[in-house]
Length: 98
Length: 221
Image 1 (cartoon, chains in turn blue, brown):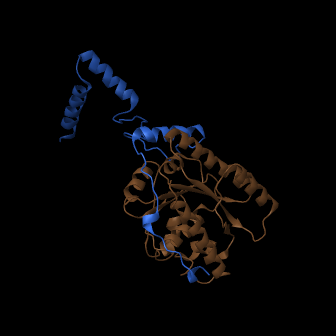
Image 2: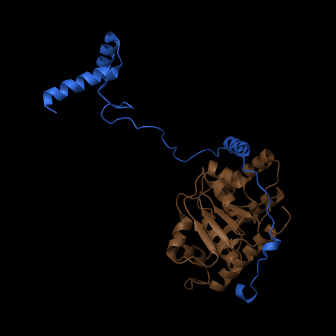
């Protein structure tokens, strides 16, 4: 039975090598793995803002056709689109009594 | 002090990786080593084992280790005088190839079936590729798992084929034992769980296996 003659580990006898963890080395390891089908399988984190479920736009502000109209009006007036939106906000405030 | 990192790897699911890792970790800890076990399997087999009861003394478990942090996690712990034991997922993934690059010994558990051997050999091919890429030897060995008292013809054939190719076979193999699979039901180790089948034989098998691994860790690598 194992416990009648238990073996003891002598840490001083254990052998370990120094391993290279540099990005260049890991790149070589990744390449070697890729060749044999050991490829990334973890879900990649999505960067940036998720598309709006309402408009499908990444930076959802207004519906696409409204966006086009605002862009066209800004071009016609030679101003930034934000100026058109500021004007609209001003009219909204007057109308709403804010 | 830097101590060895052992990686348990096979792209074949159900080959006995987690059982091998738990048996090895608990036996090494029983023999006096500090062991940190890394659970890199999305199925969280080691974490499930750890949740069943208190961890045996001298064992720590870190869960949810991923592809992006495996190298850093091994590096953090292999300097602390603790044996690092990595249990990997049963797929061919980048996590596997990165873990192998940091190993002092890779153990590939394999059931003595043609399917296990065919898929398990892919781990050996990966090690060979990495050895070439890194220009260093990576010690590795195969352990047969869930073996029967009498070897099948298939087992004898696979063993002979691997030996012919110069593959290091760990002896003794890990037999099919009720106590081994019950580790995931009761947690702890073979000394703390309620008796399951022939406990004495199970303990002896696990201890001799751990000693065989220990001998490989004390060679010049």
